[in-house]
Image (cartoon, rainbow, N blue to C red):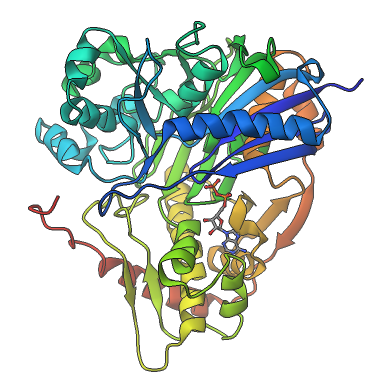
Length: 505
Ligand code: ADP
């Protein structure tokens, strides 16, 4: 009987379980969406119990679809939406508040107060590789402790624990409150909290102190590929959980970006470009993040430079759900194809402020360049172009930081089925854009990390052999046109800045 690896992908909009075989092909998938909770402008939450129930259901679903049971699974890997923060009671297993999602901007005041202690937004950057921004987990934990009745006292008494969603899934999978769930995270997730020292790969007590987060709440930091514990959950009882990677690091691993200088860009809710910088931790001077790419067992950690963009695919969702201009995401391409260009319209989706390379929390979205000429086709095009332009800004920053221009870009994620976008992306970057055969690189990366730990795959070379090219888009735009439209984009970005006033929550 053939053996397989299961991968749990706990994403921003849905939770998936995928079963992979040795060739890295998908054997079965099950997926459930969860509710996006928007209690106020700028706030985004998830119900962690709903997510755990969905996780259980999709594991069961994926196994059933492939007619498999726990005995066919050699290991389980976990990948997850990063930075989304949850605080729960370790005795009851009950969250004290919804998970606060990475896109949520409620911690702006906390970030400003920390910056005012000295050093501004870069106060912790040398240690953690990140600027102070609402994006990261630490300030979110602080918000929960400050705002949920009794939470601080319970945390100080040692009753509450924190985790990103990897830790929540692992803890529940390995037994939860009743059966000794494991309270662990991996280095990639820890590197997104603002609390981990990038050199020692341990929690930084000084930063935790300034953020008023008790050390007892923090999970143990382990590598990305090792056995953390066994599943207690019935459907996978006894199977080792052996890999954890934050979703973007998992996609980098799944795209086999193992060499220094290789990069991938994932087009999902947001966009995330990661460049492998090897054992060297490269500080960014151009608005990128320095982060852990992966760590295999007791090997040296591998670092990455990252360009994070908050809103790309979620702008398409917004067109669908909030405006009703399209009834499904793929329709945006049909609409965009009704026109030849953007008709002068530029859409800067600064819904959560602007992330890389700007890091401007005072920005808000703007649709500019409008005239009576502009129709919904042009706006659909502007929506797609927004993803490509934001990616150009990140690629320029990456090239400047690394000093070595990228020659091609490996892409993946939900939006890469959009051929109009991919061609425009190649045109605007002026480099080839390459889509792999297995587009599910995030889930695959976590499967690889788990499979490697238990010897299912013997080495990374085997994974490299599994990678295959599906389609390549080659630039086809003249230089003048490219630089003119990009110049307009940059002008459009300036129109979104300085929007949020200090006295607005
Ligand atoms: P995540 O893992 O972040 O939840 P996915 O990788 O599943 O996201 O990608 C989903 C995103 O891709 C959604 O935001 C959706 O709007 C967008 N999307 C899906 N299909 C298309 C398409 N054909 N054209 C443009 N955007 C698309």
